[in-house]
Amino acid sequence: GAGVSQTPSNKVTEKGKYVELRCDPISGHTALYWYRQSLGQGPEFLIYFQGTGAADDSGLPNDRFFAVRPEGSVSTLKIQRTERGDSAVYLCASSLTLRSGSGANVLTFGAGSRLTVL
Amino acid sequence: GENVEQHPSTLSVQEGDSAVIKCTYSDSASNYFPWYKQELGKRPQLIIDIRSNVGEKKDQRIAVTLNKTAKHFSLHITETQPEDSAVYFCAASMTQGAQKLVFGQGTRLTINP
Image 1 (cartoon, rainbow over the protein chains, first blue to last red):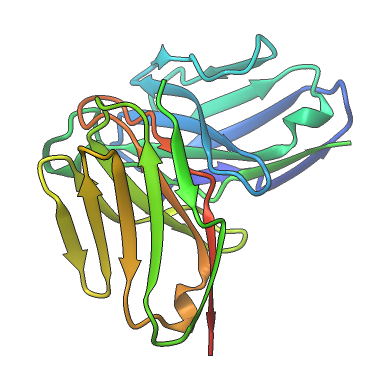
Image 2 (spheres, rainbow over the protein chains, first blue to last red):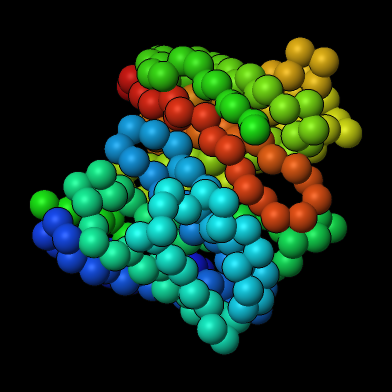
């Protein structure tokens, strides 16, 4: 598609529930990232994929968070047993490659999924 | 790991005046410094970036300067317009490989007509 698409745009859930957030990157982009942005803060890195594999998941806060990208395109961020502190905007971004030539690794962000845990 | 500090947190200027936002970083290995503009409820959008092999880069009314020795970089917006009102984020990362950007806390810029 023309840009990075994220669904849902808004998700309200109850504490303890399971949530899935979806990201559809720009067509042809091999690298995909998830960031989390809390109110009034800059985005924080969670995880990135190169192709199908999670190349670096060092930003995931704990084992309740998991992400997959089974076919190297669409990615799903999964949050188990949600807590009120998980409330934030979850941003997905993609880049053409990981290599820096001609800005090929510059990130393009999606509009985000706003998660509210009651 | 990298730590990026951004100042000021809020900035209000008269339309037509200049605005300057400053950031410092801690990791001397960082060599890529993008700036993102985020309007309310919208996605962060890259407005300009600079790599460590240059000290300054300009794109129309926007410029970024980098001082690698002091580990700080700044965004300069001249002839500000109401549509420049937004939250601006600086970030730092390595040029090569994955863009694990470390962001500053953001600056809310308001342009007063």
